[in-house]
Length: 157
Length: 111
Image (tube, rainbow over all chains, first blue to last red; front, side, top):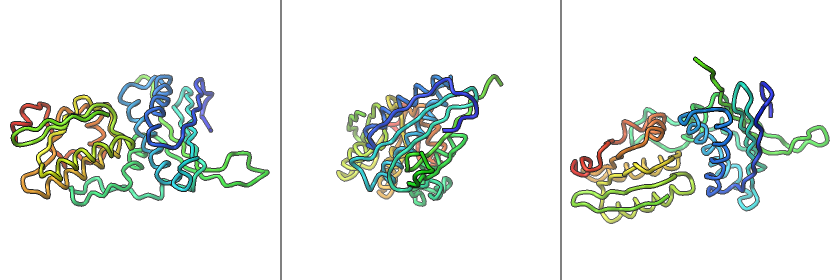
């Protein structure tokens, strides 16, 4: 995972891709937010973005392998930002292909598709996605979906 | 997440405690659907003790609001919504779609 500076905090946790694990992952991300000295409002936003991302991974990418799919969450903090990378080895799932919902629509016009993605994009400062295919021997990375989100640390205003 | 339901003369109050995420939201949805299926369309959701709501929870609220509004004079009222959750509702553009109250007694009396 690329960071702008040298991380002073670096933790990795792997969870089964099940909805009941979202709470555990939320606590894991919460520790990283504390390391980044984020206040309660920003910590809530970051935790929500990760929850939405993982819910989509579980629902879409892992649909083909529900029993064995896992999500590996890497959190790193340097002086500039909190970096979160979510990796799964499910089907290719590019969240940027999902259109944003119409947030100005009235009750009848509100479908629910895309709300999770919308939250991720608006709660985090950067959202990047890539899919790594098996390409030995050049590519040493584990194949699968890599979703990276970044929340900048803002110092004294 | 825990749910407790109190029936009043003109509405029902659903008190929710804890997290409403992709895992727990279906349980909330089922409880609310049980109410609407039994003809109760004036529902107050007391969110005083709700810690967290993701889009899965918002989905449930929207679905139930649609059902309640389709039936005459029915609606969902959100009471004592904690600020981070209100901000989430605002980000989703949901604030104009619901009635809010900071006082449970007043909300019950408003029906």
